[in-house]
Length: 188
Image 1 (cartoon, helix red, strand yellow):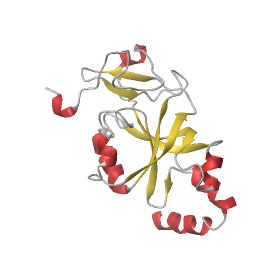
Image 2 (cartoon, helix red, strand yellow):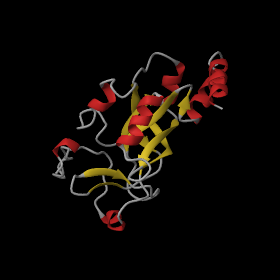
Image 3 (cartoon, helix red, strand yellow):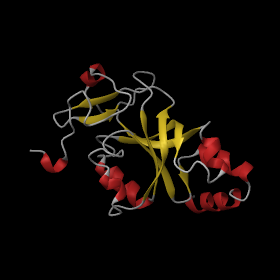
Image 4 (cartoon, one colour):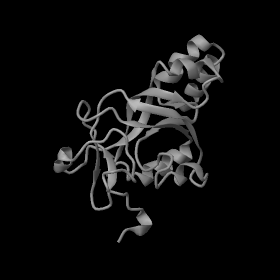
């Protein structure tokens, strides 16, 4: 399975016309996978160092995006953890960041996010708001007018009362909500 996808991609990359729809249609290209992060893994947030320190694999920032569908993004539990409730149509279009990650980083993220018990990794459509490398390829400019499929860590295993918590469109641990995220090493 995986090898043929890689071969198809290398053949398709010769033709820009073929490459774009293929590249935008699936969350994985070759061995890299597209992930949308909306919480503590974003730039400037408490767990962002995990995305860039290289210890857990490779991640490449691609740009900023917004979920095509609305979702409830809540801050819940005694550690003030952001959760994207997998309840499309409710809440807001959620802002986040798009990364390419390798297999090792994806495996780390699955463990870090308590997948599949706490969060589940599911595909989501994301509208590109800002592409990191605007001038490099036709893919970057056309992506600004397109949506991508990315993996996101959302949850269906949440407490029923969480659906009644305030919804956010752009998570910030240091925001006015006064619910700062509690790092794992600081938890009792």
